[in-house]
Length: 421
Ligand code: SAH
Ligand code: SF4
Image (cartoon, rainbow, N blue to C red):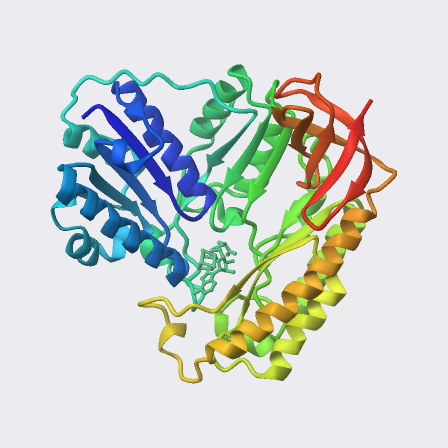
């Protein structure tokens, strides 16, 4: 095998893993190509959170099978969440073009070893690539929460924390190679360390990362509103490098639905957490995930979510229509909501959110913000500010990895625009 292509679906953990697979394949002497038809090997890292991404994967496998039948290549390797739960279907659709299926519950190390055997190269010396200005670092894999709609605990298995030493070493190496910003990852990041006997594991890890020289910004995903303590938030205020951005998935604004989802908090507790954050970090941006059309959700209950959106004024919402996932409790519930109603609720929330995002972004006009430059194109540069807003900067002259002070002159729903000093 000489060439490969990687296709990644889903979350940041998958992006991180794909990066590690890429590093391995390049170290093994394979060359990365853009198109499936030029590749000997296609690695598909799948997502099962919603049916839509699963369908996309299956149709891609079908496409690869057609290429394989015609040209005798590429072979595919499928991993990630769909590979954990749907190996048979993957093999049925891909037939001989599927060379290997690796369950997403297996460790990255095990999967890289399996991949090594599969491509038949024995001695691979990993040559870590120089990383970008920001990097993902998983700190805990899997999830123990079992929210009733969610397939993740089935596809990723139980919680497994990495040790503090391993994480800090990885971040030090990243810093030595020029990484300025790290994004710590976990499905419920507040549980970090519990399974390996750490107390206050998450906040203590943040405090240790804060001291690593070279790292200038720290972000993390995803905290769980039921496990985020006021005390942790207060300790976060002491951190120098933590970005003022809180992604707090609420899922619903109605207490009966939250209970059915098994989220472990009420609307009132959620609002009080957000207010606490807003008091301590007045400049923070707050984003969320919402599901509309959970089984039995009435119009009035949906309106509670709508009112919550209007009350909290999120900077951004990742909005999904409920998608029944095999094996989950909610998929079997009576009272599934018709697609048209889910669509109506989704559209209405989107339009409310668009208005709020626009207003929030426009409130930056005339102010200064600090941007870490991620890409430089002709005539413009692109990066993010501490609140995780994408900023388009007019002009060139700065380098990737530099911080610039930018005066915001315009904004739309998705970006801020400005000029640098
Ligand atoms: N661990 C994180 C994210 C998990 S999956 C958390 O607890 O929030 C990312 C998002 O996908 C979830 O927040 C949820 O909004 C959405 N999601 C998960 N399962 C879903 C389903 N069955 N239907 C629709 N959206 C879903
Ligand atoms: Fe899924 Fe809930 Fe775990 Fe998030 S916390 S991954 S939504 S089960």
